[in-house]
Image 1 (cartoon, rainbow, N blue to C red):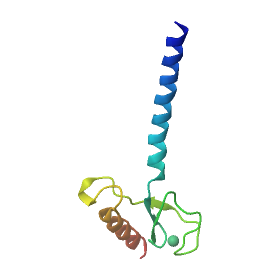
Image 2 (image 1 turned 180 degrees about the horizontal axis):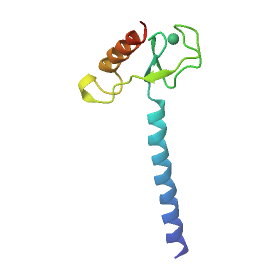
Image 3 (image 1 turned 60 degrees about the horizontal axis):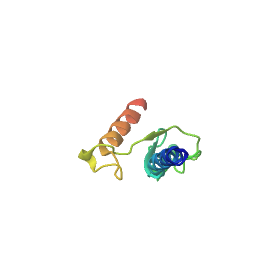
Image 4 (image 1 turned 90 degrees about the vertical axis):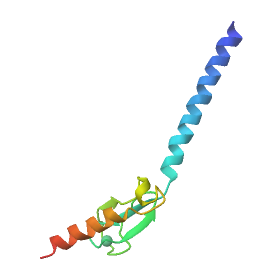
Length: 93
Ligand SMILES: [Zn+2]
């Protein structure tokens, strides 16, 4: 009886571990980030503290593609980039 109980608990731990692995793998995926100030696009897990383009502490927008139309998570969402560029051009008058 005790042995069976132990086995169930061990399986629970294994399941939790594999679930943790899945979420960790997602975090390791590369994302595309676009600077809101100079529209510099870079590839990184997380947005940088200082923008390599304008060397300021800028806001970065995730412009990674998450839909099959633009190629999936390893690709840049060109539509989003184009939209961002249009928006930043509209700001400058
Ligand atoms: Zn910048």
